[in-house]
Every structure is written in structure tokens, then in C-alpha cells.
Image 1: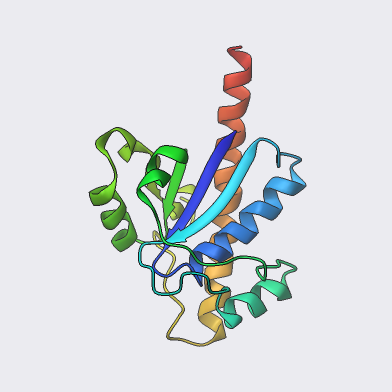
Image 2 (image 1 turned 90 degrees about the horizontal axis):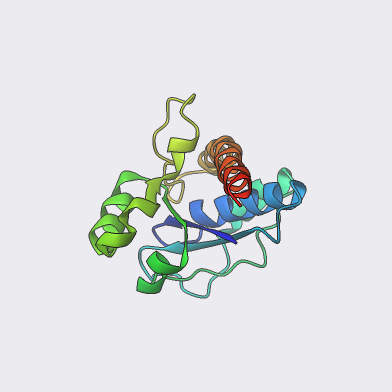
Length: 163
């Protein structure tokens, strides 16, 4: 089982959007039994809350359902339990690298590294803006999610060849 964790600040905008998008890609690829998906926040501001209504509305326009998701805070055990800990921006990356046990730091990466064809290296925080910011987040997340799935599938295929 490959485990993927998306991380933003409060776990109500960017990371739950990434979780919802990536989960649907995983399901469409028939890999639900092979890939586990979750999200968390570097801060506990919104623990237990649903994703931001604007994030849910923009996601719903593209048939992603984020309504079942609830915010949680990144925990120390996540570094051990997940294979990919994907930061939405460099600030999250710095926090995660600082807090990660040294033996798990190689699992911590910027999510947008999986969309090298785009100019954006970070997923911008849409919280203080309007719906256009949430649409941009969704565009970026979709692009990086496809790249991430390709990368994980390649890893799964390589591992199966070595069995």
C-alpha cells in the first residue's frame, strides 16, 4: 500500500482539494486497494471542520465531492506512516522538513514538483480571495495529481517487476 498525504496550512482549502482530486484519479485507475490518500494541516486552526465552502463549490463544478472530508493537524506519526508527504508551498515544506525525523525527510516534497511543465512551483493560498483563486488551485492540483499518479504507478510497476 502506497500512502499519500497532502499538506497545507489549515487543511480546509488546498490539501483537501488535492485529496479529493487525487482520490478520484486513484479510483478511476482501479488502484484504491493500492493507494491510500489523506490530507492534513501544519496548524490546527480548523480541526474537525469541513473544507471551505468555496473550495467545495469549485470542486463540485468539476464533479469532485469534498463534503466528507474533515480537517486534521499533521502529526509526528504521519512522517513514519506515509510514503509521500506533499507540501502545497515552500512554507509548508520548511515546517515539514524541520519537524520530520531525519530518516523520513526524503518523503517530504513540494506537490507541484509533479507538474514540472507548469510555471507554478507552489499552490497559492486562495483563502483570502474570491472563487478565481480556488479555480486556480483546482487547475494546479489536477495537473500535479496526474503527474503524481504517473510517478506512483511507475514505482508500483517497478516493484512488481522485482518480485
